[in-house]
Length: 265
Image 1 (cartoon, one colour):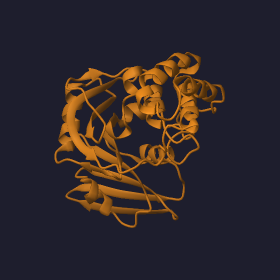
Image 2: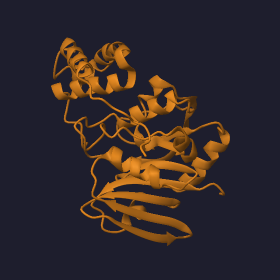
Image 3: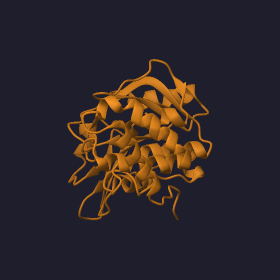
C-alpha cells in the first residue's frame, strides 16, 4: 500500500496513546485531544506514525480543522473516540480511491444503531449528503487543502448550534466542485450510548435545525424545512404539531448565525 491513510480522531481528556488501540488504528493516525494543556505525543508502531496533539481549545469543528491542518496522509478518515475500525480498513480505503480515481471524498459503511445503507455505490450530491455521518467520511487531503475548505466552527458539538457541521462541510465541498461517492464497503462500527447534542425534539432542536438549513441552502431552505417537517413527523409527533415544528424552523432560518466555513490563514 503505497498511498498513506491517516485516521483523524477527535477526542477529549486523553492521557496517553491508548485510544489508537481502542479504535483499531493500524495505519497512521492523529488524535486531536482537547484538554487542559498544550502538548504533543509521538510514537511509531509497526512502521506507522501515531501522534496526539493536545490543545486547550474546545469544539468538535475546531478539532476537525486542527486535524486537517496537521494531517499528512494521502487519504484521511474522520473518526470519533467511540468508533472501532475493522481489520483491513486502510486497504479498503485505498482500493476505493483506485476504483473512483476522480473522487475527492468517499463515504463508507460504519455501522451503528438506526443507520441504514444502500447496497449499491452512488455519486453523492447535495440531498444525499444530508444523510452522511461524519464517521463515514474519508477525503483526499490534497483536494481539501487546494479547495481551502474547513469545518464551520460556529456549528457542531461544543457550540451553541450543537450539530450540522458535517453537512455544512459536505455542502461547501460540493460548492467548490469536489466529487463525492458512497461505496457499500464496511470499515468499522460505532458504539453510541448517547449524544452530546441531541436532547430530544424540543423547540430548541427545530430552531437550530432551521439555522443549519439556512446555512446550507439559503432562502430556498424553506422547501426543505417543509419536507423535513413532513417526513420526520412520525419521529417527533409525540412532542409537537407539524405546523409548530415548521414555524420553529422558519424562525431558526430568520435568525440564522453568520458563518464562514473557509480556510483561515
